[in-house]
Image (cartoon, rainbow over all chains, first blue to last red; front, side, top):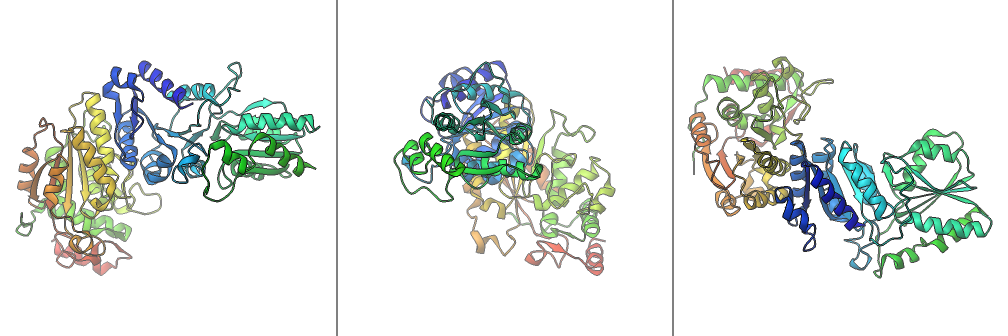
Length: 306
Length: 272
């Protein structure tokens, strides 16, 4: 997914001389072609995230569109004030590409595990948040960022996740995608939890509970219209996310329902607990332990429903 | 060490101070110490150094001036009003409901390049502008005015490393070195010395100047070499609260609110 994202940035840069790439201290060879072909718009600034964000703001103030890339926790924690003041207060068109969103860096421990990145970014006025579900969707969304006004945070998953998005379905920033038609329960998921939710929905269907699945690739601005329309037709909603319960997709959905419906359907949020990770292993093993794999998502929903 | 004590303020410097005080009077608050420390630096920049068009604040060929120590905004506002970026009457509305001018600069104000106030942000933005104007092959210079307390912030030094690394000879860092931060002296809180060698070691050309001596400031800016492949750092030795005997070097005058008429009157009288 990261490769798809950066390749798309490279393609955008070839077509648009306003595109600038800024990395902190990325892996050797990252975007080598970009560096060779457009050296004046390629910067590897070193391990200095606060500076990188301010610098990207200065470049954007001059009319360029910087794409900034580093590890998600460093991009959202270390330089939060710069993101708020330099980017969002000025509403600048800077794109933040956060590697390893969620539990991707499980073996590296809690300094690298991004469990609250969406909450941090969501709280800031003017910020757009993209959480693509697979590499193809990443490409479709990143292409659109060239014309999107204001700062954007792009959460990048591990990569090599199953391709479940469909080129034939309209994919637009800010527009939810129905992946599976509505049933008794609506599962609203984001990022790599969409394909897990689809698998969970299959299990549930085989047990007699029909579930629709909605893909929220844009957490902010939230597609409230699509959520409210679907919510009015179901008995219950389950949100599924690879993020702490505070301030992520589940929170956004609940806020949307409570703000707009007199009698909203009941809601269950499946998410990471409000705690730092205290184990290593892999993204999958941690998702196992937090009951966020298809079988456990299905059993949790089944139990809750019954 | 350059002495900053010998300067007698001329009429323009006195008038600019009165203008800044009119804003403090209007808003009943402000940062007098930082403002009065900065007046000559901002005066020389806007009178003699910067290319700008007040009718067209976004003129692409302009020089960019970022007041990174945003709490000194009244010095900036005073000069922007003086140059016609907005009406001088706006100064008296300082910090009031519906006012154009608030307690820290915001980019919605004509002539303000970047919103500042949280310290340590301006140099990074300046580096970005310096790089961008080079990409665009503009002959613009980028000036970033920082406070001495402000450069406690580690982010400033990240940006200083970058500026030296990129050989940004179109970038000028200006340090308002009044040696007094909010709690006390810079020496007792977080000593910056040796300051000149610090900037030099980050790849900057440096010069030291009495930050209240208008002629010396002009000379310093005129001597800058914008083709030397090095960013510049100008260390301006200043006095916090310069021009008001009771405010000079007095930490109590870092910020004032709820100011009484007699305090305002005393400020005007000292400048008459």
